[in-house]
Length: 106
Image (cartoon, rainbow, N blue to C red):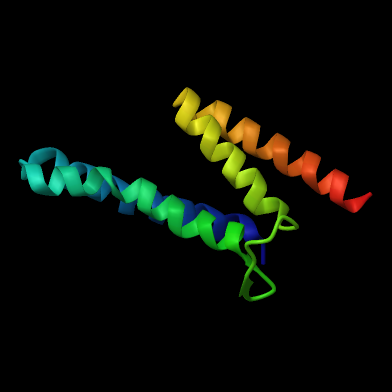
């Protein structure tokens, strides 16, 4: 069996699920409190994804200077505060991570 029909159905279902929320919320007046809360969802989700990657090594919290992911994350945080630019933050974080991994591996 080819994987292409499965991929097409999964893509269509994902699109319809997302479209349903857009279509429903576009017709309903969102209360200001809910609108403010919804703006905080993306940072919360990103934090939940990124923080464990920065802090956990082999199932334990690693706050040492040997944790290159944490150092790169701190540098990216500084760039984010300084520039308020998402692309600059991602670029600086990735460059720092690659450089630190290269230097530590040597």
